[in-house]
Image (cartoon, one colour):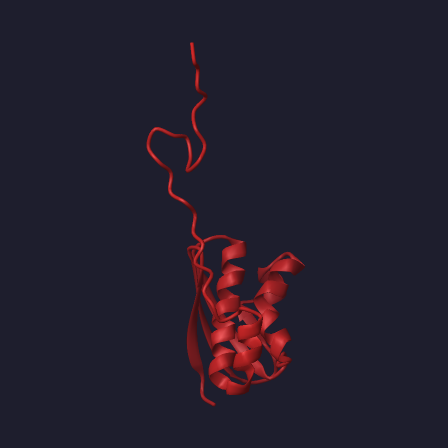
Amino acid sequence: MEQKNFIGRRKTSTARLYIQPGSGDFVVNDKPLDEYFNTQAHRNIAKLPLDVTESGEQFDIKITVRGGGITGQSGAIQHALARALDDHNEDWHDVLKAHDLLTRDDRMVERKKYGQPGARKKFQFSKR
């Protein structure tokens, strides 16, 4: 298997993932995964497809992620990694699909409306 690249998205974040067979290196924006994500929760989100397919030490993964915040970026990495693993081994498709990892989470921030301070919030109403 040669090096391939896959794209994952979440909110306004986009992750480009390069994967090849290797020893299990996981690099995000030229930093190790543990250094890039401070919290264990975000690391778990990003690595979930590897845990589900039990293929943690089989691949070298290099990721470039742009836009959004830490939560969106970890979700984008998860999406790209699930796509990559699905492409690599067809047997993992059902497992990834069962954990809902192949579907892009299309929830976005609702836009602010004019005449209001936010998307849903209203200015205080005075009857008299």
